[in-house]
Figure 1 (cartoon, rainbow over the protein chains, first blue to last red):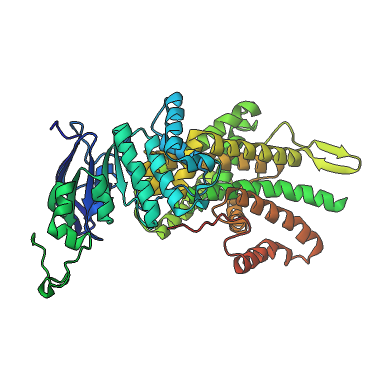
Figure 2: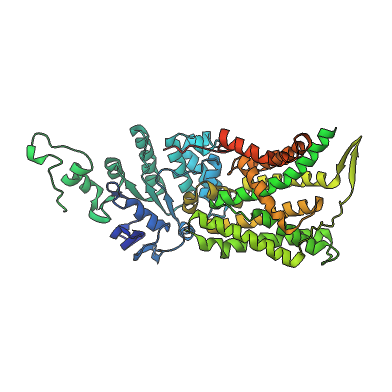
Amino acid sequence: MSDPILKIRNIESFYGPIMAIRGVSLDVHKGQVVSILGANGAGKTTLMKTVSGVMDPEKGTIEFEGEQIQGMEPHMIVNRGIVHIPEGREVFPLLTVNENLSLGAYTLKDKAQIERDRELVFSYFPILKERRNQEAGTLSGGQQQMLAIGRGLMGNPRIMLLDEPSLGLSPLLVQEIFGILRRLNEEQNMTMMLVEQNASAALELAHHGYVMEVGRIVMDGPASELMASEDIQNFYLGVQEEGVRENRRWKRKKTWR
Amino acid sequence: MENLQLLISGLANGCVYGLIALGFVLIYKATEAVNFAQGDFMMLGAFVTIGLTNTEYMGLPFMVALPISIGLMALLGYLLDRFVIRQMFGESQVAVVILTISLGFVIRFVAGLIWGHNPQTLQNPLAGKDLNFGGLVLGMEDVAVIIVTVLLTTVLFAFFNRTKLGLAMQASSQNQLAAYYMGIPVKRVQGFIWALAGAVACIAGILFAAKGAVDPNTGLLGIKAFAAAVIGGFGSLPGALMGGLIVGVIEPFASRYIAAGYSQVAPYALLLAVLVFRPHGLFSQVRVKKV
């Protein structure tokens, strides 16, 4: 396989005195979807924030297309084509859908390109076209998530960092959004790094998966392998082996500990 | 007829309050800090213009001095953010509040040192002229103040809604973190907002000095403008202007119809009433975030 587009090596990040990421290394290749699974507080979001420059790592390197970007200002990182779609949508509530999309293209200069991107976003999310003059704060949760993804696309990203796109959405909407993400990956060859709690949705979409626990990566492999792994099935997919008393979920130990 | 005249002069005063309140809200929305020196910015802007135009100082033509003083005040706002306020990043809100209050004192004393403590009027082409509409006599300055405020509001409105920088300013005030994610250089945008607040304060000062006298303590008017901003709904730009107009209009009517001594408290009585019955202000923009 070719050199990875995003190369993270031994990253350590802190919230004040608390070490949130304890030496994480991972690779994302061009055109790939990489999923990072993990429970609350595993450090997934922190990892994303460190890549997009909102947080600075204490140690380690982040290489994007051969250049080190750790510790750069966020707008410099967006300029390079790394777009972070944050957890919980974070749209601009009092601006219209169209204005939100325009802000997604803040770093771009070419007006014709921006309008082409806007049409592309509308082709993937027709509902946004319908609502384009509505204030974003009045959209439903699912529509806001679509807007957040669309706004990210407007930045013409070379890689998208998606933080919990399924958060707070109904199973049907999750399916719809993951369907669109898959189309984006297949049709636009969009590279994605995806953080999710919804492990089955994430692994179905991804080519490669990593499992994070308390700031470390404890397991990684091709998505199909992870999905077949007994540990993942037990702890993230909720598959239960019935009838075996000793193997009950709360008694079992994870094999990586 | 008399009431109409009171209304017009009240509106003219209210425009000045409204513009100062606008400065408060601009900075508050962008940085979550309140710049209590906003009134003193206004006073300083007035004195800078007086220093440039009045014949006893530099005696520049009015139309030349205008852009220079507005530019100077904008620069002051920008530098203040760049070298003072930004150093306070991460400190508590109270620290920033105290910093801006003390900044107000500094500006007041410096202005007193340079221009003296006597009230001065801005020499301007409109001074002393009246407009007569069939018995209704209006000072040219009052009319000019209202027209300039309307124009300025329109320009600001267009700026915030039509330009990229204006949109970026709105975005960074609505959701700072998301603005970072969009690649908006939030800190630089905040610098521009301080510059804008400085420029608006300067225009308010020019209007104020054109229709009345300023002295270094005029900056304390900022307190009244702050009340206006709260009445209108802190965090809403149209609300700030409306709050200013309301306070401006109440004042002359109160002093005409209510006993002296009580009339001065009228704006603050309204402030209390608003805080009790509509704590977010009359024209607030409050949205509940959807999860």
